[in-house]
Length: 564
Image 1: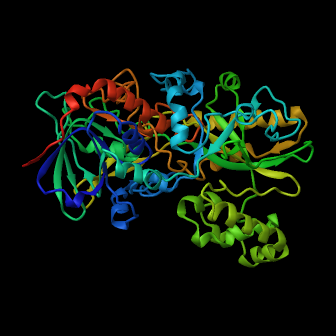
Image 2 (image 1 turned 135 degrees about the vertical axis):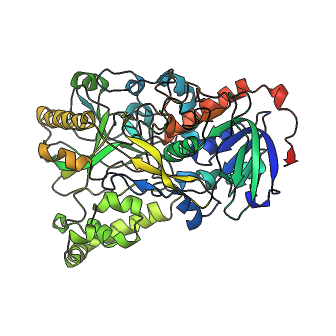
Image 3 (image 1 turned 90 degrees about the horizontal axis):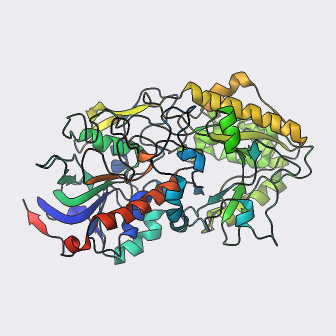
């Protein structure tokens, strides 16, 4: 059932077995996975099923270096469905090497491995509506209809073009699963903002949890178990704002909460000339299950070890949009449409100050001269993107001269100096706001440098073309977008040692017995993969653990509401 928290009787205490905080990909997946259990589950969501500026403003915070990180209230949405109301739908699992402790990646290593998540990745793919759990061209496409090669004749010991990205619709978890939650036993409370945890008398138990609404209602939730599923930034905020036994924050006795904040290192660089290749296909193919799939160039694990590099992938990308010299009517149309493109996409498409980079007249000229192709593209975009339920994932433009730019996406090293803390200001509900101090390391720079150099060699050795770029520009290009997108990772990392991690292998806080964290906050390393699929898999794994931990015998009675 779905209710408005403003209608909960004021000054009451709701009793439940499991209280999930946050209804994004992680929270909704966990709630769905517990629906058929004997547990009474309450799901709290700060927003409603519609976007609201006042609610979104609760995310506002400060940034130490605004050149390196977007505003705190961007790339995430305080609404039922969370950031899945915004995401582009790219799905892929973490690679086995991502879970390993590597001596060349400081603070690396998970307390679990990929095999521990494999049982949950298949269901995660289904919840994300990304088709089968098949992430190689061979597995995703039948021999009778093989996937076209990305670059004909490309053969390399360091790079593979056989791994895939699959794309969700993209699925808005709020809209997609609203009816299932409305009809099910999980109690969903919208407009419900979690406050600071108190600590029980036995010090190993947290709660009850105060809940406020922006309209002024107040009540508490007393649960056997609380699960924080609020994303990497808000998880750190909630834990740090709750004093815990140490007074430094719940789970923060060793000062780890908020540290090791990671995203991904991403950028666009150089020119890839594939005019010598026998064929080039850098677009999307539709798998048997109807899912859009795309090849990319992936640095293979053995090469990562030999180069002492983090994980790294690259894609063939269109020329720089603001530069009208590309002569493409399609790209110029995108440039002219920039006033209606959301911030989260505009920054990546156009750069920092698009209005200063190109002449509107020059772009209009491109649109007119290239009008047949532009009209065909816009019609195709309307049909396959705007009006389609499963949307065409992104703009694909094939340069006539087969000269592409290179789009890269790389692992970021966990760095304890990169962190989220509380600042001195408070939101309207009395919660302290955050300060974000995102930093990159020399290893991050090294990863991109050695991976690009290896790719340049791979193109030359396979004689399919060339890759030219300026090595001295690598650092500026990889920091052009700063912390990439909404990949807020590592602020409540998973590990076996409480001195260097916040939660254990089951995602439970080391410090107390009844608070768990699911989501990107628990990632010890980022890998190269977009995190949503793994976030959902971790939530499903947590559901299995909670079913085993919370005995059905103690959870059989109806939850009570008591007046304070």
